[in-house]
Length: 303
Image (cartoon, rainbow, N blue to C red):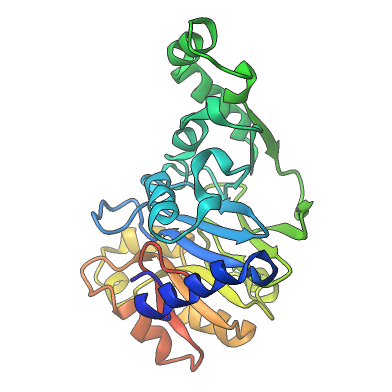
């Protein structure tokens, strides 16, 4: 699935958009990864792209996300997702399944960049970035000290912005990104993001338990991209795993409550934990309690 409108309609819409020219350009929301720490060949690690006025803004960088970016560039006309063109990455928290492709994005063809990558996220992001430099020290030294033509040897570096307080952390090009704290169990801090562009308002939950603050931030949003646990699958777990996941994630009944409070234009389900239950239960359980539009996202769905 590439779009909630269907592949044929999406291709026609995209063709018309390109023919019409930049004046009709709209905000594009592309889900780059919908997976979890559980390996799944059809689902990359968590990632979301919001594209507005020629710029891509990425949210989380799970394993495989960069390949999804390249796929979107090649098959969906998303030129802004060519890795060297991306200037802004926002990480919700520093769990591995949300950050494994951070070094992949930073390292991919960096010597062809025009500007450094900016990374925004919780305290600890600078240390993680320093670890990436150390991991790639031999490669970086070879490319910057050997005979490879490199216009600016400093472009392998990332400009890191650790978030201090909730609130607006980025403004530019008509886009505002606001960070707000969420509860993701033992990991602190963890953030969700509200992204406002000239065309859309998008809220990205990151990983979180039920959050009244998130429900408030999502009011009036065109798109709410939210993690979810199938309640049927969760109930079949051992008590220890039930306790762990309920302290860190949002059950379908709780997400239905958030959706009823926020009433987004569309609720997009991602980071879909379902365990032994069919993945579709994450959607049907919510639809039993919420009458708005709900989509069980696949990688590269567009809204």
